[in-house]
Length: 226
Picture 1 (cartoon, rainbow, N blue to C red):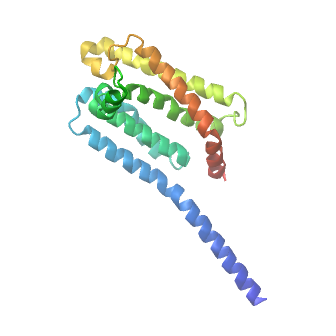
Picture 2: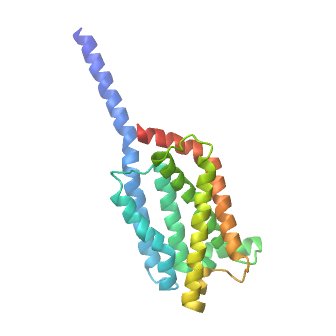
């Protein structure tokens, strides 16, 4: 009997160790993401092309990062969402440092593909739909009766489009107030349909995000709830 009890204790200890090791990355990941974002912000703030443009581009990060940190105990985010938010923050920081029309990576793509404009702005607006889609989805699944509902996906896309439209109004207000000084922030690059393209890119990004990441996101939310 003592041998059986000892074996059971060893099995329990091994199971606890396995659970602790599997849980460790999820507890470390948010801190790693915060560190990466802070370093990225610090680097991007060093001698940016235009200080006002930098601030306008990263203001969302400056607001969202402290909120996420303060709410981490009451409302911890899934690992997938943490990584996506960190990636989006870096995209914003890079665009803020160079301005979206002059990001070197976009210039390389422009020259390599023979494009007429720097495509980093389009990529930024794809991300503006791709990442908020998972953020909105997580909020709706965890705080509303929409989990498993057929309305979850369309309402998520609608919310992303609404945010994109609000951002375009924000750009319009910056143009009205700043005049030509806001050109670097607008990054229209001479495209009269830039506003429509921006919202369309957000729509595509949100749709692709839900199609590709929803099942993965559901698994993470199930583990988070358990």
